[in-house]
Length: 111
Length: 386
Image (cartoon, rainbow over all chains, first blue to last red; front, side, top):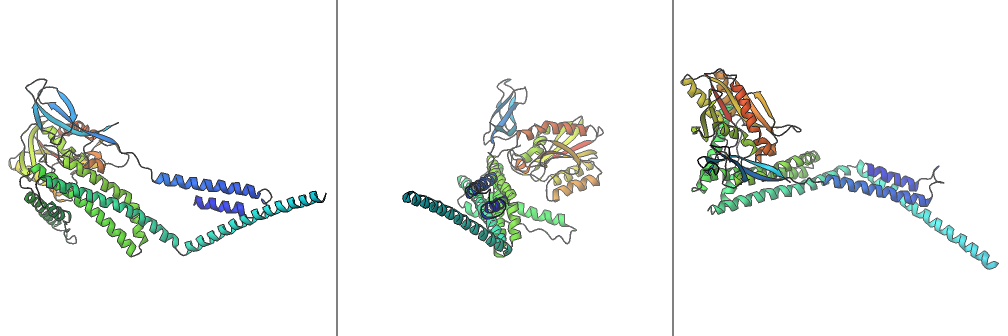
């Protein structure tokens, strides 16, 4: 719509004979036409650019939280395919007696 | 003198011809612009703008249809590769059977036993698909088979989305139905979003990671921790625990397989069993993920009344019927998340909501008279959660 209006203005500037004919010399009309055409192209480029804008996808890492059933030992590491919440994975390195198990698996955004 | 006069005359003649040329160029430009506008006006009047618009929309839809096709093809290739690695020789045949599987909705004009009929149709589907995968992979364990089955269901969904969009586009073009093409063009961003989410979900399920919808089972796991599970319905277990000095029965689907169990059947069976033992139930609490509205925060908690379960009807109605039959208050606690967050790997914000949900459960538990038991149901897919 705006592009059409600009084109209309362009033809008006270069074509019509009227009260402005004395002021609007051919050279001046030529410059105005070029300005309107440049404005039209810029607007079209901006519209195309806006419609194809894409957000960058966020990067995430999957982490596994490990806790001891007996003491307050807690650790985090990268997820492994065999992990699942509730899986026991050995003895606690802190108290020795307690069983280590997976309590949480979740995705966290990374920079 | 004659030469200078001649020279002046030549100059005047020269500048006049330049001006004459300039005005004829502007006249041409003017004429072309006016002719262009007349042509454009005539074309608008004859409906050319509509044909042009439909052409542009069809072209856009075709471009996105190619993406949908590639998503379906990629997923299929990935599943066929995994099945091949597990020793299945004719994996294409299995994939073909599952991907084209359909369910016919029961007759709705006669609603009397529609729930029973719907449940029967779903059970038929469930046992057939499970049977196909078990037959194809007899040596695979339960968890592996469940992950393969869920992956095949995701492929089924992707395949259907692609075929349906193609059908609408071709129908619109064949019948010159610009309204259909327009509606399809308007819906394409949403359809693409769904399809891309499903494609990402395939990777999540193939890795066996917990998803956002696993919030309910995760809450149940945290309430039960190391208690021994007991099977009460197909793929559904319950634990006996203590919450705020009250006996509580925590129900969830059996994990870490990818399945949702039959919580409705489980609640009904458990409530009837406890009633036979003259054990009074103070309340039933269902915990589930809920779709958030745009602008709402992921991981925010809300409480309500009713059965928080997103099944088509058979499971939900069992919980509602048994609660109303025995006059047991039916509470619901939900954690808000988007559709993508529900079927992709569990986000930190959702995992952090688990202790808050447990606090809410304890708050509700205090409203029950001591001596009465609680039934807590963790609704959701239990993939990656034992």
